[in-house]
Image (spheres, rainbow, N blue to C red):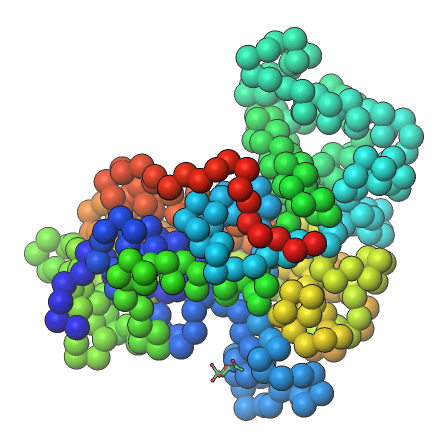
Length: 454
Ligand SMILES: *[C@@H]1O[C@H](CO)[C@@H](O)[C@H](O)[C@H]1NC(C)=O
């Protein structure tokens, strides 16, 4: 370990592994370390032994739920938008060759005390219980407006201005009911709270287009998921990094982030009595909580907390047509909250648990001093729960840009149901760490997507 690296990367979360792959491909000498003996950091996919070690210390997993190797339980539940930025990044870097994806079978939304399928086809939309007849006509006009909008053609604007008008005014223009607004804003545009209503409509327009174009890709839902769990994503990027010379060290305790006392710049990482040197460090927030240098000032701050429950079920989520995988969104308005509750359910169809089991994850942003109670509306939809693992984790972000100290910190994986913000963060860290060099991904044919099973 006496050589000098261009960059040391700490933590093998998705963002960090994408960044180490990008740097390696760019010809940089990269050393990537993780304190855990598995990939994925906070977003790892754990087997039964690891899951019990984390949540049920000293206990053995029950014998009747299958073998260790049948399990890959995500610590942070997320799906990928079929047409989203992470999918594009996987395709452009060719990391898709290490992975296989499966469509999520259906998307549901909670409305007036029960759940309804988010229509996947015109036919389902016509039959949907989500809207009455007249509301369906109004919604149809709204969606035609979205689909037909062309920036350069004012005839398609109906007198509206996406950049100057708040979303709530666009809903008003089409006369949409409150429940329809909840459904469009939360189950399609995937906003987590209602602050978007007052922001310019463009953002929501973009999100609706992402949803509909992702939906159009494979047909059943806009979401795809890697077989064997989300932990496959960082590993795919790590393999790419390794091909370009990146070095990986798991199970490596980082004892100190060393900064030069004179310049205040990052100089190396100390593990035991060994220090490895590099020009910069990139890492997830957990490595920088304790602060660095003489003053030990923390380099990250907490913005919120997320509460998540991993629930083992012995049946599919009730009222979902026995779907093997489901995204279910409970818009905050429907249950008197400020943030939505997400339920993501997977099964052996995605090779993440033993046959006959279903793993539902319920999550939301903490708003009170009794976080577990906040999950109740979601937990109540699951039927009998066989095992439940509860975790509360901080959402953290860097305080500084890293320009002065060459310490570039990623953001925690957020509480959204998908990965779109992760790619924004990767682009941001890349820009900061490379003095504004644009991220230039090798471009492949436009219509080439990921390999996805029905
Ligand atoms: C499960 O995790 C443990 C602990 O990391 C590991 O030793 C074991 O090999 C894993 N089992 C399988 C089947 O992957």
